[in-house]
Length: 426
Image (spheres, rainbow, N blue to C red):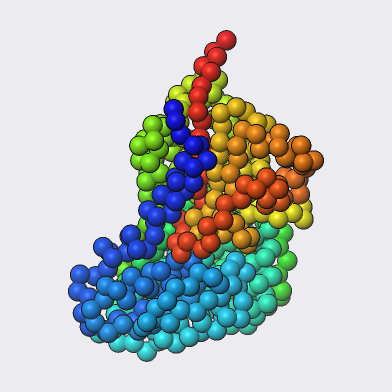
């Protein structure tokens, strides 16, 4: 088969990103009546690109304000775009969250609001609850990011420490009609989890948030503990009449990107195996992928090569060392350590937003000679994994993938390409 494995992997990654880009997915979901005045608000890594689509398609008066991550902005003429910090919120995110809340307060039932939501919105739309400081939220956020907590657990805590998340933004818009258009970056695509669900009812409780903090041994100030023990800390619950005119529409999800990549695989002559959205420690998820790859090569199961294993979702990294790298670099380093140069296996792992964690790369590529080439440079895959140094490992191999911000986000994308099976059943 005449194919450049690394080029194919890059094309699969680009296909996955394109399938979730606002320019491809938003317009068809906007209201059929696009006349009259609309207020546009938004938060997330795709917010600016989504705002551009609304400006292009809306026929009536458009105004509004969206916040996105630094470097993820896009030029808009009528909707203001503000950039702020992610994954740990900063003062810019706090200031714009206050402005967003003010913008939708005191509306009437004749008003329409479009809320553009995507991954990263939780940190970007940071408005602490009464009595909680930005510094409190920053320290808790940092601790959660290092703890190995799932995105659902992190957002449960974030919602209950917020004056805007967990349905509170939707409640503030009442009695206006609210249309939320969301790009999912979470396993299961739950509206309550995507960016901590600012406009949807939230069934989780403050007691659960406290339990999560205890589970991961995260110390919190007395003010935070007192707040979470207060009835006022509860989010807007299902059945609340203030959300009766709030509508939620999912416009892109990780599965769509995996399916688009699968079509590309078939066109190139490779059979795709979609494992779906996955959670868990990056290094452990990599070991499972390595086991599947070995089974395919040795026994042609669960499918025969040439093939590609595809998966998405959001893994976690429990930080133990002082190295550099996000979830995808960690996954790929663990995969490299597990396969140790198994012939015929190539892999790519990248974040569809173009940023792996807080680094400047989207991810990296592993080839069959990565393990040996690194060893020749004096780099031990297992030692670098112990130090959480996936970035440094693949930087030394000139194997980092740098895309710049993509202005969308359906989370991680992983593709393992297997060229041939030995089918040795002895």
